[in-house]
Length: 313
Image (cartoon, rainbow, N blue to C red; front, side, top):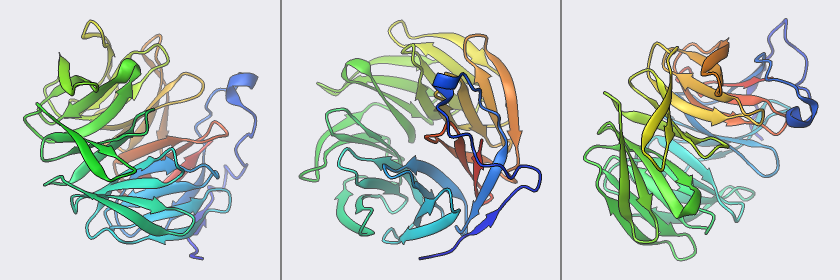
């Protein structure tokens, strides 16, 4: 077992409240209670696992599995040959990862072994998204989105339309898929026939992150520094959140209904979506915030270009 250093903030040593924040009415407090260290370069995507452990991926070419409570790295997965940019938990309990080496790997987490490698993209894989039907979507710098049958490893469909790198994906109701790109557009795809049915415009920069609200509205973060909320059917932007000073790399919806955003400006902001106001700003990372993951106790994990993962209460 690998040991990773666990740094505790001197004034914030209490463990996260274990009560359900939805049932108790608790709001996200935003105190950093742990810092996980072990990656040797930038950390990117985070993924919560069924047993409560946390997976992280990095520019150092590895995926690490963390025991959050102990603050230790319990496993390192090391078959990618270049940086690992994205993770997705599968319905089988396996973990999928996308890399700059242009492959998608499927991992047996318990054994720590790669059980399948999906090949087809000709440039780095930037995002992965699982459909309720069990199919996996992948986005790449090759401007394509591929849909995979995970049982056979076959590519079922290739979606073409974006004119620049595709950075993010989000599964929508009714079998639709949203994708965000360097071409400054969000495309809405009907998965049954692979046709783009709508293009959302309104940015002067790349779209790096997508999230779905409980209302069915789509949220996007971009190089343009702001966050937009979209009514998907009409294709209209209904709200813009504008307090970050740099690129918005990641978004996460909390169980309280609040929205969390991470930015290159090194901050994490918590938003009241109804009013469009920032209710809290979390500071502690020494580089841009690349990934966010809500935790079962209502807390939050964040990854950063500083190579660390922080746990927030």
